[in-house]
Structures are given as structure tokens and as C-alpha cells.
Length: 102
Image (cartoon, rainbow, N blue to C red; front, side, top):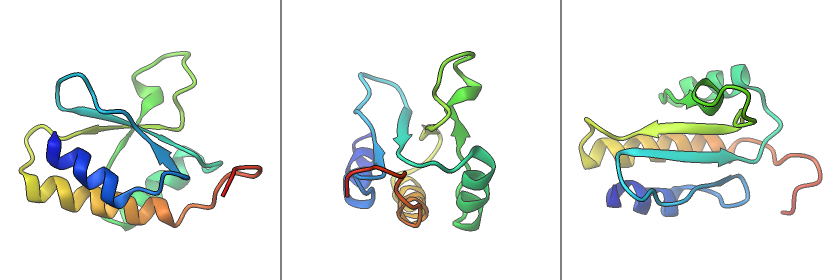
């Protein structure tokens, strides 16, 4: 988990994504600041070689549609860092939502 958190701090643009360190386990939740829909995000992430699950699959009726669930279980540290590097590169290409602070 420490490798994942370090990679998030290095690779993510805080204007486009936020997260909190979990109290335990092997799951991370990233909240995106974007107007892009799930299909657009899925296509973007696939082009960067990353698969993620949208949060709305886990929270029926909850507005987590811009949250991503990342599982790092079963991955070694180089795989975690590479996946987060790819994810960060994809997220940096997203435009900020209208009215967002830059």
C-alpha cells in the first residue's frame, strides 16, 4: 500500500483527482474531477493500458459515478507503480470540469 500511495502522490494531478489513504486493506478509491462519462473514461484508460472499475458498481443509488476503485492485491510493487503511472498519464489528459479552479 505504501508503494501505491507514494506513486499516487508522484503521478496524480490534485486538480483532477483526490484520494485518502485507507485504514487497511488493498483497495483505493480515487475521486475524479471531470465531466467525462464512464464510457469515455473506460476508453481513455484502456488506451493507456489500465483497467479500473467505476465506483457506481459498488454503491447502488450513491453518486460515486466519478470514483474509481483500484485493487492492488495480487500485484507487486513495480506493477503497482506502473499501473498508477499509466493511470496518472491518462487522468492528466482529462480537461478540468467547467468552473473548476486551476
